[in-house]
Image 1 (spheres, rainbow, N blue to C red):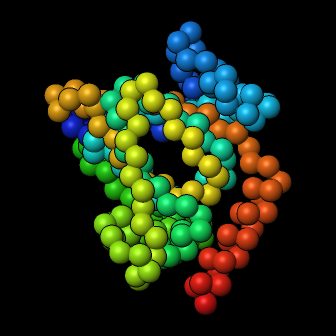
Image 2 (cartoon, rainbow, N blue to C red):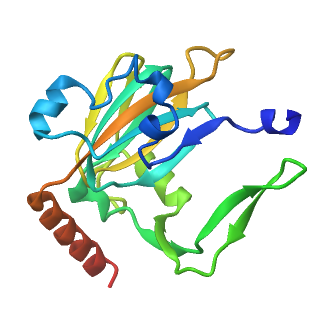
Amino acid sequence: VSHIRAQSPYIQHQDNNLQQDFSQLLDAIPLDGPSWARKAFGEPPEARNFWAGCSASVTSAHRDHYNNVYAVLRGTKTFHLLPPTDAYFVPRKPFPNARWAMEQDGTCVPKLTNDHDVLWIQPDDERRAMEETDDGDECGGKFVTVDVNAGDILYLPPQWLHRVTQRGPSPDDDLCVAVNWWWAGSTTVDMRSAVQNALEGLSEL
């Protein structure tokens, strides 16, 4: 299908897709993640996810409630990280709940749903927070940028705000491939999540 080739290649399913859809890769990828992570968390991961994309694929700033162990297999992932203590400095706004759908001519259009709005970070605020250099200013804390190259593993704690870009090994070979494992947060993490949500709610009053 020639019109699909003009789009940005991207695979992202946060539903244990490594085991369900890409099981042929399990001969090369440990199902339950690195041995040190299994020892640290004391149990198998809840989900194992396969990711692929190019430099046009961007994951907007968000946070997860899981312990995230992220391994890059090909190319480079660039993580822009902000700790939970600074996340409330980056304002969130309500946006319509929608999903992109591809038309027969290859164009992508948003399909609105009748569900509730979603609180999300506006791209302009996201970029401003990443570009900020001074402490104590309107945007608060500054994102820390980390490159995770092929063969590297990043541990991302729960509640850390992160924006992710990616690129292939070279301009002529722009495919990036990665896999990550999610471990559930502890009761302590759940309490931190509740406190974090309360603080962000108060900051929006």
